[in-house]
Amino acid sequence: MKTWKYRLLAGVLTLGLAASLAACGQKTGDQTQDGDKDLEKITFVLDWTPNTNHTGVYVAMEKGYFEEAGLEVEVVQPPEDGAEVLVASGKAQFGVSFQDYIAPGLIGDDPLPITAVAAIIQHNTSGIISRAGEGMDTPKGLEGHKYATWDLPVEKATIQQVMEADAGDFSKVELIPSTVTDEVSALQSKSVDAIWIYYGWAGIACQVAGLDTDYFAFADIDPVFDFYTPVIIGNNTYLTEHTDQAKAFMAALTKGYEYCMEHPEEAAQILMDAAPELGSNEELVVESQKYLAGQYQADAARWGEFDPDRWSGFFTWLNDNQLLEGTVDPNAGFSNDYLPQK
Image (cartoon, rainbow, N blue to C red; front, top):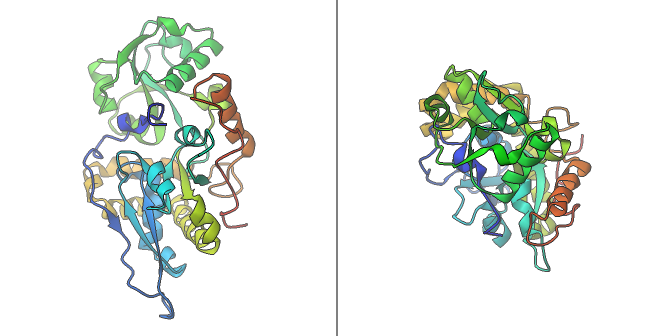
């Protein structure tokens, strides 16, 4: 798992987010509002430093949604092994992951005991960004240009497939080992021509900086790439043995993300209050939050809901292209059962 797993966000969530933050949590005391019982303590582990993907968690804390549900939630930073391992071990009950990160852990006779229980963002917003007007607004246009690569099998297979769909030749792309920590600077300096980004952060950063760009999203070219990234994962034992509390957590978290959708500017401020390091990029945080307000739920019937066909379609693609060290069950690893019913 460790050899295959990769961290695209390491090159994406960098403007003002590089410093590690101390663990932060909701301190709610020892009792619920009616004073009758102790709060159920839950540890929630991030995938990276706090950013706009996580705003719903901080809103639910600030607004008291968790406390109203009888929960005391602590947010912690991920260990080197990632959120998946901490959740699987039971040291955290919930965390943030990605469908592609989960896949390797579900292979074999002893899979990681984790389940994706909500999609933070309904559609995959990742794609390739480049300077405007240089011909890279479509995949074929990458031919002859410098692309900042992590040299990862899934990454390269994705780009090759969308290029071939556009009559392009992946072998004609100049692959430059990625050292990108600031997409705006990298494009402006012309050290690279094209970068894989998540638009909700790096794309918005380019807009805020006034940099004219071209962009294409992988999901717009091939629906198999409309997989789920990022997601909320839960520990299987906790989900089974504490089902009521798990559902209460998800109901409170849903309220947090619904608030983000309805009040993006206020939600952005709550995030910056919780993570003051983000304050130096206030405009970026606010604009990113406004963008994500339309992406969290998008066209789904409710926030967090998985489309089984989209989930299995991506896992099937991984299997068909032999991108895993084994075969993953296309229908494994997710559940809609813990989301509040509409």
